[in-house]
Image 1 (tube, rainbow, N blue to C red):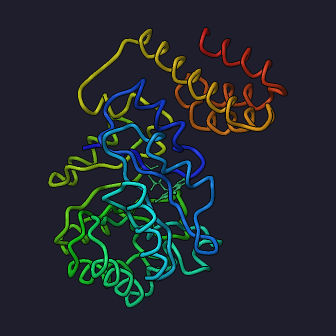
Image 2 (spheres, rainbow, N blue to C red; image 1 turned 90 degrees about the vertical axis):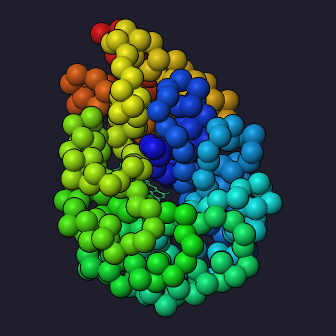
Amino acid sequence: MIYLAPIQGFTDFVYRKAYSEVFTGVDTFFIPYISLKNNQILKKFEKEILFENNPQKNVVPQVLVKDGPEMLDLSNILKNFGYNEINLNLGCPYPMVTNRGKGSGLLPHPNKIKSILNGFFEKSDQKLSLKVRSGLIQPNEIELLVPIFNEFPLSEIIFHPRIATQLYRGEVLLSAFKKVSELSKHRLVFNGDIFNLSDFKNMQGLFPNINNWMLGRGILMDPFLPSEINGIHFSEEEKRAKKMDFHQMIFDTYSDKMDNQGNTLNKMKQFWSYFSFGFPNQHKVFKKIKKAGSVEKYLNVVQTIFRD
Ligand SMILES: Cc1cc2nc3c(=O)[nH]c(=O)nc-3n(C[C@H](O)[C@H](O)[C@H](O)COP(=O)(O)O)c2cc1C
């Protein structure tokens, strides 16, 4: 099974919907985290979870919480929106989040995590999975947590084996992944730095018991990666046509939804920090995109890039 990782600002409902219309190979789509503000969810989060914006079969929303009451509020809101399964974020590494005791800020506090899980499983009949890192500061923080996770009927644990201070850089801690796979009684999902088919095969070789894989940046860079992992290959010409369709779809939707052309342009430029890896001379492609000063210029540059 291949999961699309939640990537705030990128794998939003516009991206996910267009992706599932053009590409194949992703089995489950994760919605980037939603959180509470004054006991409510913001409009931008509501759009992410609305049923009509999530036509795929398997969509799992993710929550970012600081304590048990927030967890229950969000799980109730998501239940009312029709979701029977949710994912708890125990991995977000950014200080703005961790300093508020959320995301990987919870990892050094096993008792807090236990109380969130206790409260959830006492009151909710939804399924719950976790997305975790190795630790906030120490790579072995996870080892104290796995025995706690083992006490609960979690559906699975998605593990990105890095500590928070690494953000998304530096080495993936393969030994931490191995350790957790030995300690955990739950199904483990591997997540981290699978950018091409050979990365996938390497990880599959290292962890032959793992059947579920979450891919994030690898899919943003190469949307064909999930189908290739499934053994489905396309010609260069087919790939180009599909990528152009996909680009047009997300461009049109953002143009419709955004307040002004400048915002659409910025949004599309952000995507090219990943899309550019799908072209020879990534650096040059991204530079050309960044230079485009208007939507018209941007569309011309995109046309040239696809043509050449
Ligand atoms: C810009 C950005 C935003 C992210 N947002 C989320 C998020 O909302 N929730 C989450 O669990 N992980 C988030 N992640 C982490 C990814 O889901 C994933 O764990 C990480 O990118 C490692 O996987 P990859 O190497 O396949 O990309 C984010 C990562 C990036 C780079």
